[in-house]
Amino acid sequence: MLTESFTLETRLRLAAHVPALAPCTALNEIGLVHTEISRRTEIELFLGERSLGSYPGDGVLIATPTGSTAYALSAGGPIIEPTMDCLLVTPLAPHRLGMRPLVLPSASVFVAVAKRPAQVLADGDPVMALTPGMTIEIRKAARPTRLVRFGSDFWTMLRRLS
Image (cartoon, rainbow, N blue to C red; front, side):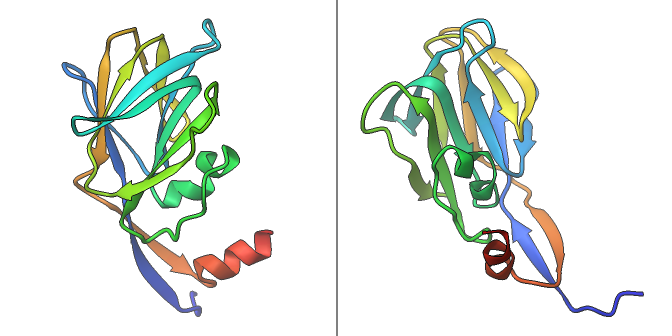
């Protein structure tokens, strides 16, 4: 029998789409990372039609606020309150000075162009390979995840873990 109180939370999801392939979704992040063969990739990232820059190195993550405490945190990204309405871009071991994490509105639509071979990960699971010149679109998914939280709130749990 459950005697504790609970809260309901709505969490953002991401959707990634490559033309002619089925889209995938993720609760934490979409990773565009190097393949085992190349051990380096380069992704040019666009926000709409504006270039955010080229990310040479291990790759780049597009994360939700929920994902800010997952892979993105390990890569040096900020902790974002999980119910916020934003997206996070985190470079992975960039081979260029000045590449820093970005926090952008959740309405952002990213187009990533592979300059070198890369693989797409959805919450850490391999989804597809990108060859040079291929593009992938990443945006807020149409449907969120709904969670039931028992016990402590996010910040209390975070303090306990540190």
